[in-house]
Amino acid sequence: MDPLTALGKFRNHVESYISINDTEWQALAPHLEVSQLKKKKNFAEPGKICSHIGLVVKGAVRYFHIKDGEEITGYFSFENELLSSYKSFLTRTPGGNYIQALEDTQMVTLSYKVMQQLYAHELIGAKMERFGRLIAEHYLICYEDRVTAFITQTPEERYNKLLETGGEILQRIPQHYIANFLGITPVSLSRIRRRIMKISA
Amino acid sequence: MDPLTALGKFRNHVESYISINDTEWQALAPHLEVSQLKKKKNFAEPGKICSHIGLVVKGAVRYFHIKDGEEITGYFSFENELLSSYKSFLTRTPGGNYIQALEDTQMVTLSYKVMQQLYAHELIGAKMERFGRLIAEHYLICYEDRVTAFITQTPEERYNKLLETGGEILQRIPQHYIANFLGITPVSLSRIRRRIMKISA
DNA sequence: CCAAAACGTTAACAAAAGATAAGAATTTAC
DNA sequence: GTAAATTCTTATCTTTTGTTAACGTTTTGG
Image 1 (cartoon, chains in turn yellow, blue, orange, cyan):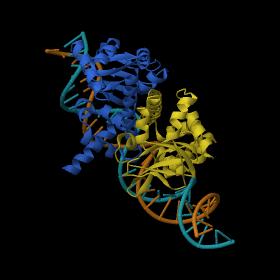
Image 2 (cartoon, each protein chain N blue to C red; image 1 turned 45 degrees about the vertical axis):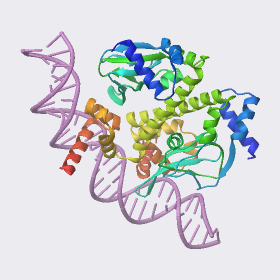
Image 3 (cartoon, each protein chain N blue to C red; image 1 turned 60 degrees about the vertical axis):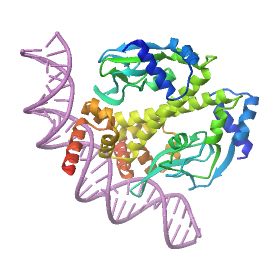
Image 4 (cartoon, rainbow over the protein chains, first blue to last red; image 1 turned 90 degrees about the vertical axis):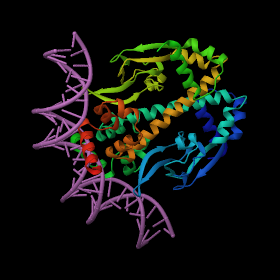
């Protein structure tokens, strides 16, 4: 995708939260970087500070931890979704997980430093603050829902819910990653699938 | 606690995120309400929109869902912590959980409407936006950590972690609520405790 | 002060999940 | 195009958790 189209996607994403005019966009756009991440390459790594936040404009990435030598996948970002090791990015502390491209991925990114400059920017600072707030609130709600699911639902119920609403995850993500995402092992998910098959058959 | 002291606690809380001067405080303070919530009374209920966000200045509250007639406790707020059914408050949609006072509780609260007015306020709007962003980011990180714990740790590991860092929860919360909070049943937590006792003994 | 409710532990059993390994099908990489 | 790696399923066995119920202790509420 050509960089201008990529930037256009970023603008669309911003405008899904706040309205900005062309003048404001002109103030913002020069601070954005369009970059590529080849499949299997890392956007973030444990022990390193995640210096950028970004929007996936093409491709997909996977978030995972390593525990006892095993990868445990916790999340994904697809087209038109944000990517960042949020805690590391916001607190300027080393992160605990990898973010890795599942496919060749194109992103529009912003460094922490630039983000702070934008917050302090005379023309668009206020709008950026609002955008930052709305983004954080959006992901806060996503996480709240996810914690609620862990507290109130069994793994089988979480999988059934994913079958209803999962969309892209079910289409594009290998099953053993989905298992981790649900908080169980791949073997366990395979058994859950068989149980469901038998019931609906 | 007298209302002025309660308001002072709110100001301190705001100032742990942003700095405000007396003029700005004068613009903010009149919009705040100080209120009481008797033990076992609800601050929020499922099916109702959570119209207020607040700071606990004294006491404690418990968040819980009801599933199959059983209460499942998901969270707590203590002194100097926010309380709100965040998703319901932010999206203006009916919530899914109760928020109930564990003890007689005093709060400083703000309605959604007032919150939006403050964001649009000429003098302090920008600071409130920033405050709102930082709050959301703070709780986003809390939830991110909690999801990570569900994905990467066993219930026993989560309990051991809580023993190290839990603080107030361990002192003030009945064990069967803690069990729900960890994502397990009270019976299971009791067994985990016995296992740990045997090892450390 | 007393009865009722709440709380934590334990036991017994059933259900589910984790660990490990094997095997088949598919995909990837050179 | 072929060997290697990945993916999913299945089986076996172990461990953990859920469920239900009982019991003693503590707390709560009139």
